[in-house]
Length: 297
Image (cartoon, rainbow, N blue to C red; front, top):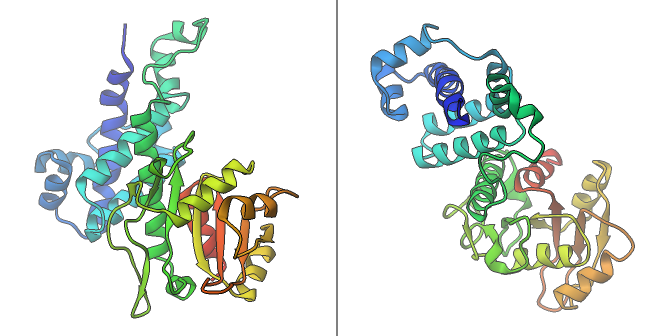
């Protein structure tokens, strides 16, 4: 009898730590600094860096794990990511890989009888609110890093500021939406994010996403950017469907009417009395909508 936690300890951790140690060294960190960040001994770091630890080939070649290692290494090395944030993002990936991913397959290899189990096998509940909240916050953080690292994004920020939001899978209220407290602002030509994302801190952009969901959209995330005809044209040229809604209408009926003829992923209004024109990008997750904004610059 072998538990999936043993697979994590025996296969995932040595592989992940060695990949991360190598990447941190590539960023110029000393072995001592890497040891402090990973919470392990300097001699262990030396073994990881010099290939003295056995690694799992399936995990080494896993795209999601490689992307996580790159993201975490860059964040830790630059100081833009805390060790707690790195831990949470890694935990989220582990849970995903345990539920039908490579860790689940490695577990079935170790315990062949699991493959024949006649009901759904779930060591960890992937639908728990805690897991869902962790994944949602992690997604918003990753999306914010995309925006921070996008040259020229500040030019897309409207006068009222931008926000990047993502709702829980079954979210239907403001408290179910993670966002930036306050707003993303253009400060001297640079997108400035005042704090880490939290739930229940966005009213306007969160309301737009929730209204779109209520109207039948599958979107869970949203980002508002300044309106300009060229911005809408660029998004349409990139393959998005854009529709206009009435700036002076209430959010829910206005968006419901705009989405009545199809599942658009860009909605916009051109302004009104005391209302700034704005474009909303609506997508499956915060990273995706952030990348859409990046790709039109």
